[in-house]
Every structure is written in structure tokens, then in C-alpha cells.
Image 1 (tube, one colour):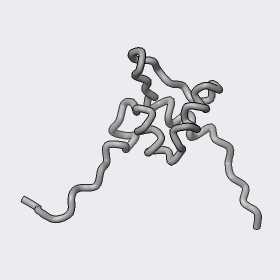
Image 2: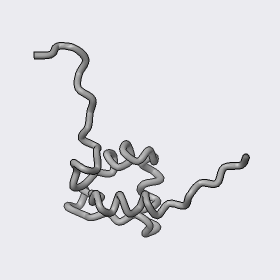
Image 3: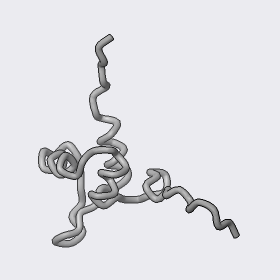
Image 4: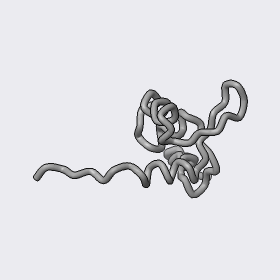
Length: 76
């Protein structure tokens, strides 16, 4: 039994998750929760209503959203 450092949190790995809460998606993507809600409201990010207060983002929708973001062009 290893009593060293705790294991790294890997629950936000897309390959292991079927869906994210808004908080989990915000943490995984690096996008603030306010921006996540705005993207959902604007229709650019698909979210599913589970209950009145529970909203999730399917892993496939998360991946599609991130892949559709514009490519950054940094000044030289």
C-alpha cells in the first residue's frame, strides 16, 4: 500500500467520462463557468437537461465544441 502522494485526479479524462456537469466541463476545458453557460445559451455548446436543476454535457458534445473553436493566430 502506497502512502505517498495521492493519485492524480483522472476523472475528467474524456476517454473515461460519458458526461460532464457544468463545473466538471469548466474545469476540464479551462473555460469559466459563466462562459460555459453563455455558450450553451447561444447554442454553440449542447447541454442536456436531466432534472430541473441538473444539466450535463455529453462527452461527444464536449469534444465537438472544443474541436469547433477557431484556431488561434498569434502575432509574430
